[in-house]
Image 1 (cartoon, rainbow, N blue to C red):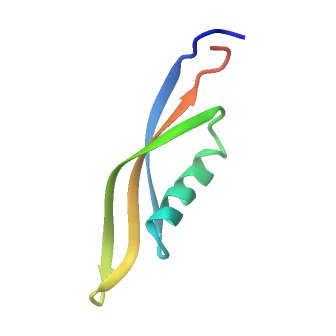
Image 2 (image 1 turned 60 degrees about the vertical axis):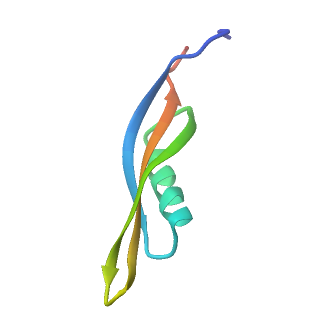
Length: 71
């Protein structure tokens, strides 16, 4: 095992009708289907869609960091 690691970041947007936390989890769940070695995330934007004066959808932009294989 290496003493250091190399990482890559991707940017994704998650959404949910329920909450910001669910929007984050939805994005991470989808990313985990194709990315290996996910280690961290940061929320860079939070926004929402308004329907009839109420929150229709929560949206969050995430940067997801993952370790490159064999690093």
